[in-house]
Image (cartoon, rainbow, N blue to C red; front, side, top):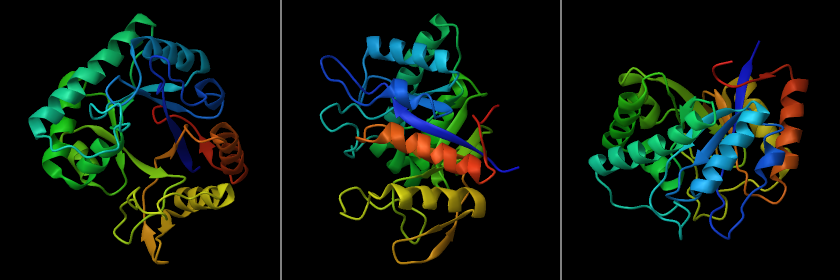
Amino acid sequence: MVRVDLNCDMGESYGAYRLGNDKELLRSITSANIACGFHAGDPAVMRSTVRQAVESGAAIGAHPGLPDLAGFGRRRMDITPVEAYDMVTYQVGALMAFAIQEGAGLQHVKPHGALYNMAAASRPLADAIASAIKQIDPTLILFGLAGSELIAAGEAAGLRTASEVFADRTYQDDGSLTPRNRPDAVITDPEASVAQVVRMVKENMVVSLTGKLIPITADTVCIHGDGAHASLFATTLRSRLEAEGVKVQAIQS
């Protein structure tokens, strides 16, 4: 039977700002990537999101990003591998502490935004992130872009990895995501997003913007939780996958 995990970035509210609808999304997803305070989130939100994930039964993951609240972690920064190592260590350690206090553990680590994309292309950054995770807990799963340097670095470090695909993002001919500064980076039609996911999961293929068929591994599917209709999309996607005979479950289930 074909199996796939549905993950979503969560806990992105902070201070007086409220983002996303985590409670609703947790009804459909199987893994929660919780922001750790650098690109989004704050201590109170981290704890409350961990609690909600525990109550829903979703696997918990740390979602470390660049220290850029104003840019939501989506702006590139010129950081060294050592800085990446320390940033990931700091953030994963913080979320792990909240999870322990709430009687839970971490399943995975998924870098966020620009840090994720930088590590997908830069082996030194990817190696630093993989090394940091392994030194914290070698049983943690590293989520990374399918076919990227991040996946290769995780495997080289001896970590378990999960190749991630995106429901609402378009792909380039080399398997990379279309940069967000391009108008065609995001798929806005929900049906087109669902169709893309079904093909990636069942056929291990994705169609690039130029129409090229690209082989892809889909262990986990990212659903962005900050869209206006994110929870409805998550429900629809899960129902369609299950109707297609796909078992939706967390990686370790």
